[in-house]
Length: 57
Image 1 (tube, one colour):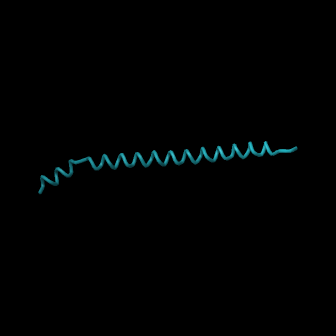
Image 2 (tube, helix red, strand yellow; image 1 turned 135 degrees about the vertical axis):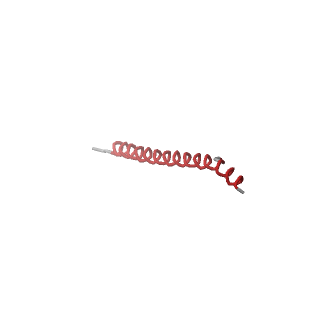
């Protein structure tokens, strides 16, 4: 029984999978945040351009 427990304690494959999962999650959050910021900047730019094109003064 102690041999099985010792082998279980040495096995790090689950920890590696969790680490890869955390890295993937952080990259996803960064991409979503960046895409949101880029989308807002583009929206503001197009709205400003639209306002200049519609100006009749």
